[in-house]
Length: 92
Image 1 (cartoon, one colour):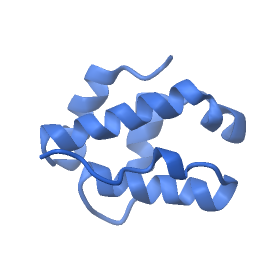
Image 2: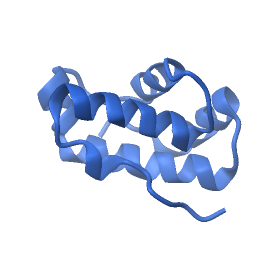
Image 3: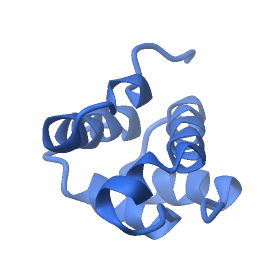
Protein backbone atom coordinates (compact mmCIF):
# COMPACT_ATOMS: atom_id res chain seq x y z
CA UNK A 1 0.00 0.00 0.00
CA UNK A 2 1.33 3.43 -0.92
CA UNK A 3 -0.98 5.44 1.30
CA UNK A 4 0.67 6.61 4.52
CA UNK A 5 -2.40 7.25 6.68
CA UNK A 6 -0.71 9.40 9.33
CA UNK A 7 1.00 11.64 6.82
CA UNK A 8 -2.10 11.88 4.63
CA UNK A 9 -4.21 13.00 7.60
CA UNK A 10 -1.74 15.79 8.39
CA UNK A 11 -1.47 16.90 4.75
CA UNK A 12 -5.24 17.03 4.35
CA UNK A 13 -5.55 19.43 7.29
CA UNK A 14 -2.57 21.50 6.11
CA UNK A 15 -3.91 21.82 2.58
CA UNK A 16 -7.67 22.01 3.10
CA UNK A 17 -8.32 22.74 6.78
CA UNK A 18 -11.24 21.01 8.42
CA UNK A 19 -11.39 18.98 11.58
CA UNK A 20 -9.43 15.95 12.65
CA UNK A 21 -12.58 13.85 12.21
CA UNK A 22 -13.02 15.09 8.65
CA UNK A 23 -9.47 14.26 7.67
CA UNK A 24 -9.63 10.86 9.36
CA UNK A 25 -12.73 9.79 7.46
CA UNK A 26 -11.08 10.77 4.17
CA UNK A 27 -7.97 8.78 5.12
CA UNK A 28 -10.09 5.71 5.90
CA UNK A 29 -11.79 5.95 2.51
CA UNK A 30 -8.45 6.51 0.74
CA UNK A 31 -7.00 3.40 2.38
CA UNK A 32 -10.08 1.40 1.37
CA UNK A 33 -9.80 2.69 -2.20
CA UNK A 34 -6.09 1.84 -2.34
CA UNK A 35 -6.69 -1.62 -0.87
CA UNK A 36 -9.38 -2.34 -3.47
CA UNK A 37 -6.89 -1.79 -6.34
CA UNK A 38 -9.82 -0.36 -8.32
CA UNK A 39 -8.13 3.00 -8.93
CA UNK A 40 -4.93 1.33 -10.09
CA UNK A 41 -6.89 -0.93 -12.42
CA UNK A 42 -8.86 1.92 -13.94
CA UNK A 43 -6.25 4.67 -14.07
CA UNK A 44 -3.10 2.58 -14.37
CA UNK A 45 -1.20 4.10 -11.44
CA UNK A 46 -0.96 3.25 -7.76
CA UNK A 47 -2.92 5.51 -5.43
CA UNK A 48 -0.57 7.57 -3.26
CA UNK A 49 -0.84 10.43 -0.78
CA UNK A 50 0.36 12.84 -3.47
CA UNK A 51 -2.32 11.72 -5.92
CA UNK A 52 -5.05 12.14 -3.29
CA UNK A 53 -3.85 15.65 -2.43
CA UNK A 54 -3.47 16.62 -6.10
CA UNK A 55 -6.93 15.35 -7.02
CA UNK A 56 -8.60 16.99 -4.03
CA UNK A 57 -6.84 20.25 -4.94
CA UNK A 58 -8.82 20.25 -8.19
CA UNK A 59 -12.12 20.39 -6.31
CA UNK A 60 -13.83 23.78 -6.44
CA UNK A 61 -13.89 24.27 -2.66
CA UNK A 62 -14.79 22.68 0.62
CA UNK A 63 -13.70 20.53 3.50
CA UNK A 64 -11.68 17.35 2.96
CA UNK A 65 -14.84 15.17 2.82
CA UNK A 66 -16.54 17.54 0.38
CA UNK A 67 -13.48 17.55 -1.83
CA UNK A 68 -13.19 13.75 -1.55
CA UNK A 69 -16.81 13.29 -2.59
CA UNK A 70 -16.29 15.62 -5.54
CA UNK A 71 -13.34 13.50 -6.72
CA UNK A 72 -15.11 10.20 -6.09
CA UNK A 73 -18.07 11.54 -8.08
CA UNK A 74 -15.71 12.29 -10.97
CA UNK A 75 -14.34 8.75 -10.83
CA UNK A 76 -17.87 7.37 -10.69
CA UNK A 77 -18.82 9.25 -13.85
CA UNK A 78 -15.62 8.25 -15.64
CA UNK A 79 -15.35 4.59 -14.65
CA UNK A 80 -18.30 3.54 -12.48
CA UNK A 81 -18.15 1.56 -9.26
CA UNK A 82 -16.75 4.30 -7.02
CA UNK A 83 -19.93 5.21 -5.16
CA UNK A 84 -19.06 2.88 -2.30
CA UNK A 85 -16.02 5.04 -1.51
CA UNK A 86 -18.06 8.19 -1.02
CA UNK A 87 -18.52 9.72 2.41
CA UNK A 88 -22.12 9.87 3.52
CA UNK A 89 -21.70 10.73 7.19
CA UNK A 90 -18.93 11.23 9.72
CA UNK A 91 -18.67 12.04 13.41
CA UNK A 92 -17.68 15.52 14.39
